[in-house]
Image 1 (cartoon, rainbow, N blue to C red):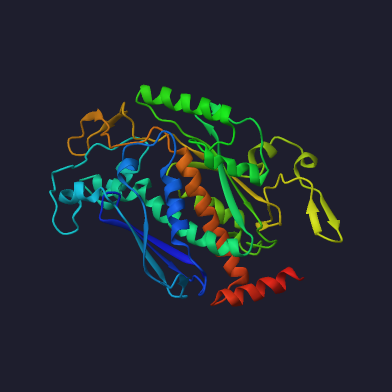
Image 2 (cartoon, rainbow, N blue to C red; image 1 turned 60 degrees about the vertical axis):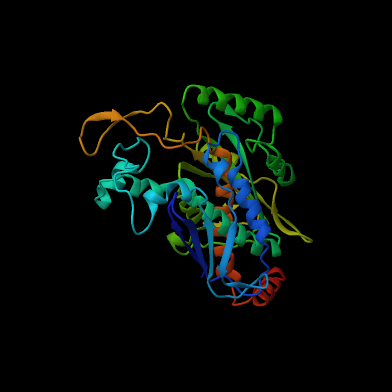
Length: 380
């Protein structure tokens, strides 16, 4: 079974990941992983941290000669900013009072985390709860993506809304969606892109932040990933959990999820047809490629809503955990909008879960075993 762990703090020495259960003999292109890491760092509205970090993966184990060994894959991503923070983040000796944070930021896990773990310095919370952790999950997703591509399964993401600006057109053409890569806000429509940039600039000028919505489309997933047998094996449930775990994500939709709730069943459900040459197919995909907790062969379509970043340059009211006096929340270096970046992370998290389910269905110790099982399944 494919599983992974992440470790590391935002301003610590490095971020680390371990992937267990990955099959042997899968070619791994490190530059492809680094490209996806760069995709995560781009996006109009990002803050100063992205000017410091140049994320690159360093494989420590589990890969030899460019191919996986079937043993755990361990890797690290160095934090270049650590040299500026070693005095406060060294694992053994630190300046306890330096950079101490006692003012929890509304919208963060600062206060709840400090109470839960008994911390008097909120830095112990914010360093790990930071979205910097998603660099590791992006790298893991990129490695998972390389396995899926062998079997014709691919993903793409695009931003459909930032603040009050939305892409009205519903786009399902997978090739057209790839055009989002050319946009600074990861939006396929150049006119909407410019309006989104203006929206970000307005928020930035007032010290505020913006959230938004992005979509993930995955094509090529075979029928039957996930299961209806148990609640925790349902594909849509697993995807929702994974995507909701991304920092800042507050809503998940599959297909016409929320729109369909206001329509009649005859307007929502996708009719089934059969062609002797191509098999079963549908002329619509309002279910978003998932029925009964399983992939149905259509493109998987997921939509995620991201809240505005809670670290603001015009801080909201809070209470100092030491003095209990009212104060304004402390300000860390922050982005104005991270929706384009979150779209890339969401794409990678979704592909990781698809890879997990793919290996449950077709898994073996080596790529060759999986290819044989895939071949037999496709011939049914």
